[in-house]
Every structure is written in structure tokens, then in C-alpha cells.
Amino acid sequence: MRTLHLRLPEADRSHPILIDSGLLDRCGELLVRAGLGGPVALISDAMVMAHQGERVRRALRQAGIPFVELVLPPGEETKTLSAAADLYRQLVRAGLGRDGTLLAVGGGVILDLAGFVAATYMRGIPFVSAPTTLLAMVDAAIGGKVGVDLPEGKNLVGAFYPPRLLLIDPTALDTLPTSEWRHGMAEVVKAALIGDPALWEQLRAAPARWAQPPEGRERLELLERAIAVKARIVERDPWETQGEREQLNLGHTFGHAFERLSGYRVPHGEAVAAGMRAAAVLSARLGLLETPDLPHELEKLLQGLGLPTRWQAWLSGYGIQATPEEVIEAMGTDKKRRAGRLRFVLLHRPGLVRTYGDVPPEAVRQALMETA
Ligand SMILES: NC(=O)c1ccc[n+]([C@@H]2O[C@H](COP(=O)([O-])OP(=O)(O)OC[C@H]3O[C@@H](n4cnc5c(N)ncnc54)[C@H](O)[C@@H]3O)[C@@H](O)[C@H]2O)c1
Ligand SMILES: [Zn+2]
Image 1: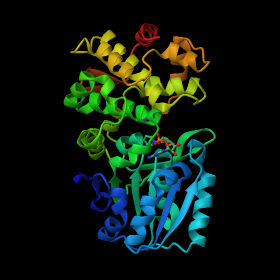
Image 2: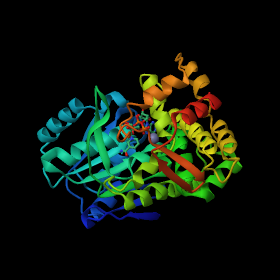
Image 3: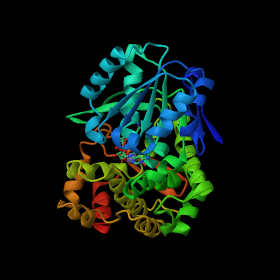
Image 4: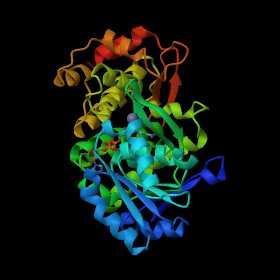
């Protein structure tokens, strides 16, 4: 078993990240060992329960932990205040008190929602999360952000509420649809570019190899390395006050604009892929890149992964026609925008990114033209 520790300024918020095959089958025993042997509310979605539910149920029974199952419909539509309100009421009816634990098993939707409920139900009860998508393992589960969407926008209500324990079982990915794997790989590529040049080399050396989950040790290492990049950044900026966490937005200024233009119909991972390519080209145009081949290498890697690299062609596949000007316009409402200026995370080389708040709109337009 690999154990990473996420160290936060408040010792009681620091927590271990356990990574090992079979952790779902041992979750009961691991809860007991962490002092969380009281009643459990298991929160998940119907798809995840169909594929992974029995493993979790059996593990809880074996450890003698009483539990209730609260299962929601899969999909982003579930991440709402009204779903949270339903969960609060079900927890009350199930008699869950502050000696209970909320165990979330699922993708980012379930983790965000359940974490938000754990943070607020009875002013906070212990939260344990077991991510089951690649994106949730390397991104959503790491860093303590939990929350729900509003009709006005995504993730507008939430909290920082790190779990007591984070259980990453690579075998949960055996049943993940390939499309979801690919979307998660966009965030893995992002992590490599931000903070792990060796991982970047490994990925770009054989792009097609990573289009499906690798087996065994290779899968475990991929997860461990991507998780480590995010965990280290979170440790330096746990409550998003130091600017460090902004690095995690590589490709996201463009990506969020694409998502917005599509009315959120395009998958986030695809938007990030196309956005990273545009950010790499923008970095080159501004003369920041020390490794001039990077935009081309990134294009080859993303193509090998089955991810888009040309934003206009990709959006038109979803029936969306947009011009570079419209993309720039759509960036104007990004919540990461500060004091009216667009902020971009730009690349110097794999492993070195910086945030810039003074990028000329003309350079952005040129980069968009070049990557259309
Ligand atoms: N809190 C954060 O820091 C953070 C960071 C990034 C993303 N997010 C959030 O994460 C969400 C996206 O997460 P996601 O991509 O995991 O989506 P998701 O939770 O919707 O899961 C994707 C789909 O995969 C299914 N699924 C999950 N695990 C499975 C498995 N092992 N086998 C078969 N099917 C499985 C789900 O039922 C769902 O249909 C968004 O709401 C986003 O805002 C949060
Ligand atoms: Zn993202």
C-alpha cells in the first residue's frame, strides 16, 4: 500500500491518502482502524453502486459496521442544494448522529455533494471518501473542496472540508467507461505539465498506451504521481489564498470558455485538453517556452489519448460554431478573473508554470486562431 500524507496547517484536517488495489474490499476495517467504527451513511450513485456497491457493502458488514445506503441518480444534475436537503432529511430519519461517518463512494459529483453534506449536517460529521473515477482520484478528491451547483453556475456553494481518510482503489477503475478514463487523463496530463516532468516524459513517449487504464503497478504509479502533484500544491495553498492553487487551472481559462459557449454540453476533460493546447501555443507565442516542441508534443499526446486539440473543429462536432472573439468574450465571465483582467496559467517548461495577469488579448486571439 502507498500512503501519501496531505499535511494541512490544522493538524486535525491533515489526512492520509491510501492507494492500493482492494481498498474498497477493506473499507470497513480501515474505518474501524481510523476510529470511525460508528454507524455509516454510504452515499453513492446508482451506476457506481451497480458496479462497486457489493464490495463496499460486504466490507462494512464484515467489520460489523451498521450502515444505511443513500443512492442518487448519476450525473451532474444530482449536485444540487435540493439533493443535499434530501440527504439531510434521510440522515435524520436514519438516526445518524455525530458519532456517525459519511462514506462517499463515487465520482466527483458524489464526492462534492456528500462532502458538502458532511460539512454541514449537524455542523459537520466525519467524512471519508473513496473516489471511483480517474478524475475524482487525481483531482476532485484531493484538496478538500466540496460543494454543489446553483442554476446560476457550477460549484457556487461549498466549503473546504477535507476527509478524515481518502481511499484510492485503482481496481475501481476496471468498470469505468473508457470515455470517463480519457476525460480523467486530461487532468493527469495537466498534473504532469504542472509538476512532474518525468511523468510528462513517460506519457508522451507512448501516447496510445495511456488511452486505456494500464494494469497493476503502472496504474497505481500513474495515480500516485498525479495525486502527489495536486497534494503538494494544496499543501502550499490549502485555502486558496496564496495563489499557488491557481496553477491547477492550466488549460482551464480557455477550457471554461469552451464549456460556457457550449452551455456545458461538452465534457470537462475534453475542454481542458483543447484548452491546454491553446495555453501551450499562447506560452510559445509570448516567448515563455524553453522547450519549443512542447505544443506539438502535447498535441500528439492528446490525440493519442483520443482528446481534442483543435477547439473550433471539436466544438463544431457538438454543433457549436464559435469565433476566437466569442471565446475571449466568454472568458470575460470566468470566476477566476481578477480585477477585470484575464489570468492565464502559462508554461515555461514541463514542471514550471506561472500565472500571468497581463496577457495582451491580441496574443490570445492569435493562439486561438492557431489552434482552431
Ligand atoms: N472538489 C474539487 O476540487 C473538484 C475538482 C475537479 C472536479 N470536481 C467536480 O467533479 C465532478 C466531475 O466528476 P467525475 O468526472 O468523476 O464525474 P461523475 O461523478 O459524474 O462520474 C462520471 C460517471 O461515471 C460513473 N462512474 C463513476 N465511477 C464508476 C466506476 N468505477 N465504474 C463505472 N461507472 C462509474 C458515474 O456514475 C457517472 O455516470 C464535477 O461536478 C466537478 O465540478 C471537483
Ligand atoms: Zn479540471
